[in-house]
Length: 443
Image (cartoon, rainbow, N blue to C red):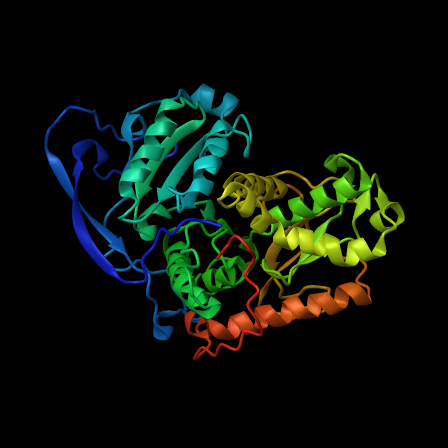
């Protein structure tokens, strides 16, 4: 889904930056001042990118202690007007403002982020009384583009956006993060095997998991968007053993939204009438859009749409291939709708789920009530009280049709897990992926 933001090699070098981008710690309601134009001095700031992770570097849950690498000394850089000192009176803080929330976005110079960041800054996601700090992670190659993104945020005059910082080192950018939206990943190039993509992107998410483990809030919520997102989320959580595995999500909400749209079109209703839609399994062509438990106007879909052949065949294929059709029509992937689905995914966790409904998210399977293999990240039906946490929905029907297809997507995720064992601390990798199931438009 996202643009390449990383290199599979490890390196560091220095880049000359204006003095107004020099390092400074950030706090909730006070930012150290860096007056633009005060000095012509320039600051040399080390830029570190580390993508390659050897099996021995993965921390085991039993012995892991959050550690910041010795070479991760540089701070993220506050940007422009966001480096200016500001103060709020105590009465204003207590009466009209919630505590600042720190949100990290990786791949922040990419197309998905270009849509997402402005939704976050506007208050659309966390609410109109929630001030926000955005921490933007990119690569050395995209650093100037990060500056451009920060300039646009600066010019948009969002009153809730109190801080913006940019950087290339996750150990700096992830510090005290309460939400981490991990979008940046390498796209699949021509002729690249899926196993190779799993390894290359897995290295990125292993390193980011270690950074989260070292410096992020212990309650940080992580949404992995970069593909293959289920297995990348597994790699990330395995490298962050001091953060609850339940806090990690793989984005399958766009698939759910697409499924709702197709059911609405077939039934001749608007999609706000469609509820209880689940995407089971992997974000791939083995995903299982669930029409068995879905409802239209509170009535089971199978009683509204009597075309069983369409439900069992065409409906599933339309959901799976929607991204590819969009690319054929428009010539590019679904950045805007992906950003919307990230917003939907966050809001499902920070607002109570409507009574009787649920939402889809790729989550850790340990303790699931469906008989799905444990220790993988699998999309399942979830429900939230609005506190950032969730519970799995128990009152679902899994008939023979669903069970057969769930087993297929489960087998694929187990195979992917074997393929990245060297990145999760589980020994040598062995790739025996049954077939190429990458979704169209994500290659």
